[in-house]
Amino acid sequence: VTEPSGYAGPRALRELLDAVLSVASDLHPELVLQRIITAAVDLVDARYGALGVIDEAGSGLSQFVTVGIDQSGREAIGELPKGHGILGLLIVDPQPLRLPDLNEHPDSFGFPPNHPPMRSFLGVPIRVRDTVFGNLYLTDKTTAETFTDVDEELAVALAAAAGIAIENSRLHSRVQEMAVVEDRERIARDLHDTVIQRLFAAGLTLQGTTRMVAEPEAAARLQQVVDDLDVTIRHIRTAIFGLEVARLHGKSLREDVLLVIDESSRVLGFAPQVRFDGPIDSLVPADVAEQVVAVLREALSNVARHAEARSVEVALDAESELILTVRDDGVGPSPDGVHGNGLRNMHNRAITLGGALALTPGRDGRGTQLSWRVPLGR
Ligand SMILES: Nc1ncnc2c1ncn2[C@@H]1O[C@H](COP(=O)(O)OP(=O)(O)O)[C@@H](O)[C@H]1O
Ligand SMILES: [Mg+2]
Image (tube, rainbow, N blue to C red; front, side, top):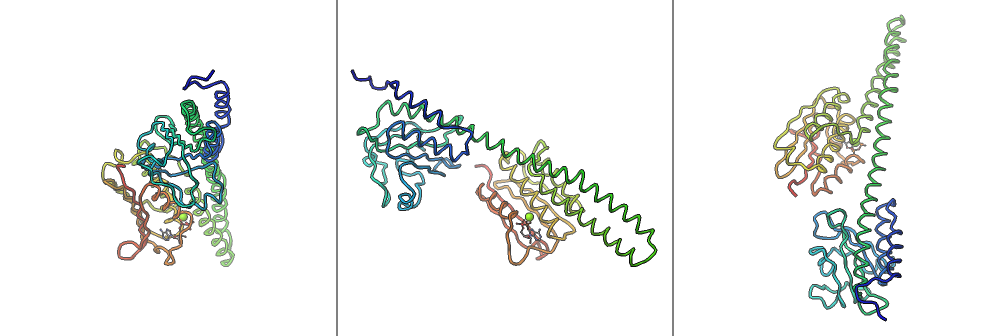
């Protein structure tokens, strides 16, 4: 008696259950992807498997996690596929796709040199909530000529479980991130509430003592210590300002920007000027808004630490692009153009959103102008 086509027997169901359980969701997201594709390959007896993650534009692949080809094999093939040809079919039309021979499909580009030959093909999309996250690509069934109806159903079921595992793993990472943020905030609060208060009190006491000391040289030395304490307090305040990462109390980007600017005046010693242009709150999506606030915080903390400025202008313009400009009248950017972590982060935040960062001398060659721009209306 043969099983009717489309009927998954007990063995297959048990394997599916094993596969689903093996995809633990509290792992690092990368590991979750590796487990998913390994489970999928086992489940349908594929020789090769890959999990392609769709990029932000939704038109290509940003990640390609493979099974069945070892490290040296991967190096021999070279660059990872970008999502053209057969791989692209599932990106354009996220439906299960089964082919007896993928080389014969009209969309096939053929394989790059050193790529192992592959014939039978089964692809299924993975959805996370309602959006297509990526695809499972399975090739070369080892126990038959082609993948079966049952294989397809099993792969679809596994993809559904995979979507949930990926979402859980993302949530898990976010919770961990939040723990780090809370830790930084705790340190920042601690520095503020205890360390600064004590230094401040010590400074006041010394200041009082200075007046009681008759000998001019001793008095001058004490005064020097008082001044040093002031500088130290200023440094700690700047460090605190940099530590308070994503504290967004405001109801809108505009409010968040004003909050950061308000906080920064404590470390700068003066209040920056600020100008808004364009319908900022309606044009700027939440993920971009979050980046802008982080970039502004780093830019202002750089002014406080490096610029020796007496004034700062902050401008935020939103039209087809969002442009954040922070201009100071200080010493200007260092001529060797050295980038520390701060500038690198700002640069990366821009690149991720398809934008750019520029640090140039200010107007009339005085001071520094930081300009951070990203496209809007994606
Ligand atoms: N507004 C500024 N004025 C003068 N120099 C600046 C300014 N912003 C950045 N720089 C210079 O660029 C360098 C790199 O900055 P950054 O990447 O934030 O690293 P860090 O602040 O840790 O030194 C700074 O060390 C400083 O020399
Ligand atoms: Mg910095």
